Length: 389
Image 1 (tube, rainbow, N blue to C red):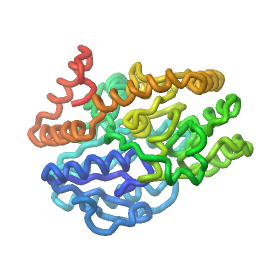
Image 2 (cartoon, helix red, strand yellow):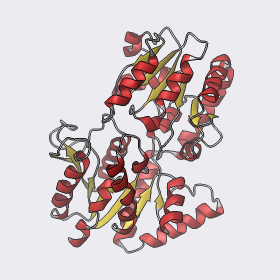
Image 3 (tube, helix red, strand yellow):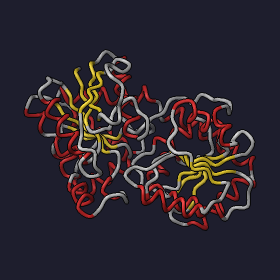
Image 4 (tube, rainbow, N blue to C red):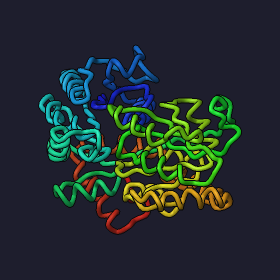
């Protein structure tokens, strides 16, 4: 098949869960014999030419908070529609508004909904209303819609009476690394709690910092992430931190440094208020880390009964659970072992890419609705492995 990916910032992935998702799928589809083009934004991707066999098509965008994604997606969609692709795959709610166009040129189109973006705190009233409106195009304009969690699938079934295919995010097996590059922050000398992601309100970072400051410990809290059109929020976190030397805000990290952070963390915290299906959470599982997560449905769907949980937005409950984990290392170690086993069983990228490829093929053969209906029946019966195709 000749496949295009539209809507993401680009590859190779640096920051961004959608970008990691696209890179993992696109490169593996190439390994399986397909021709794949990923449309990248100029400021995000500086890699010229093919990347691991993927055609990296770099196009400009209007780099403002509200026009970046839509301007790039519009340009990429026009290019993809004229390029003779068999499948054009759009990522996220906003880009789905264009998913009807390649169908006119004879391509099959797919939308993956990674989360309900209109709920994200960085958007104002107009942008939030537009993204909420895009729920309808995301399930009515393409030939088929993928969601990354059963929770999202249930939402679209209930609200829009629309069938979707659940294919979650995945992870690679974590490779343990000794603490070399992270010595610059003194993390080879102190146990630390790790948080990884974008510093945006829906990730609940403010709750984590507030709770940690009340914990009696010499451990560190490492916040590995940066702004995503959210500079005012990042500044509010710095004020909340109030110079506490135990809290390290180290910005975005990638590659070997990130792997060292995963490998040596005592505990990984995910206090999210809103998620689609967190790649960072799944990566924490794959590195065999104990995870402490808010009890939102999207997190609970990932961790099942293999994590420590707290009540979302409840800072005192989060503080108590942090203190409990720090005071009981034997419990943390036992939880970590269960987390690794879960990641190996459920979130293998090769398995999920095979499911995506199968959905493309079903759409080309006119069997997409049949595949969606069969999976939904399996989920309703509680069939093991029914969480994805």
